[in-house]
Length: 188
Image (cartoon, rainbow, N blue to C red):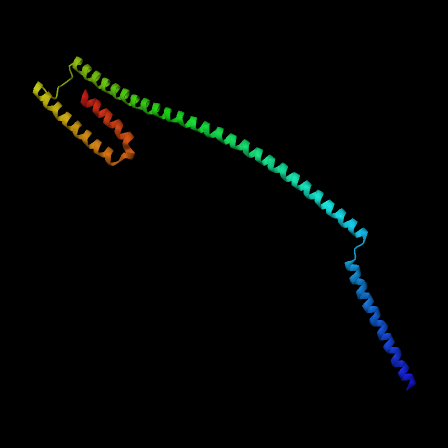
C-alpha cells in the first residue's frame, strides 16, 4: 500500500510536471509571437522601405506613362483637326467640281443636240440642192398648223415634266436638264 501511495504521488508529480511544461511551452510561444526583437523591427523596416521605394518607382513610371499618353493624345487631336480641315477643304473643292461637271455635261448635251440639229439641217439642204427633197407641208398655212401642233405637244410635255419634278424631287437633276432642253426648243 505504501508503494501504491508512492506510485500515485510519483504519477501526480509527473502529471504536474507535464502540465507545467505544457503551460510554459504555451506561454513561451505566446511570448514569442508577441515579443518582437530589435532585429525583427529592423527587418520589417527594411521591407517597408523597399516596398515604399518600389511603390514610388511605380508611381513615377505611371506618371511618365500618363505624360506620354497625354502628349500622344494632344498630337493625335491636332492631327485629327488637321485632317478634318483637309476633309472640309476637299469637300468644298469636290462640290465645286461637281457643279462644274454638271455645267459641262449640260453644255456637252446642248452642243451634241446642236450638232445633230445642224447635221439634220445639212442633210435637208443637201437633199434640196440635189432635188430629192419633198416638203411635207406644201403651203405656208400647213406649215403654221404643223408648227402650232408641235408647240402644243412640247408645251404639254413641259407641263408634265414640271408635275413629275414636283412629285419626285429625287429626279430633279435629270428632269431639270430635260425641261431646260424643252424650254430652249419652245423659245426658239
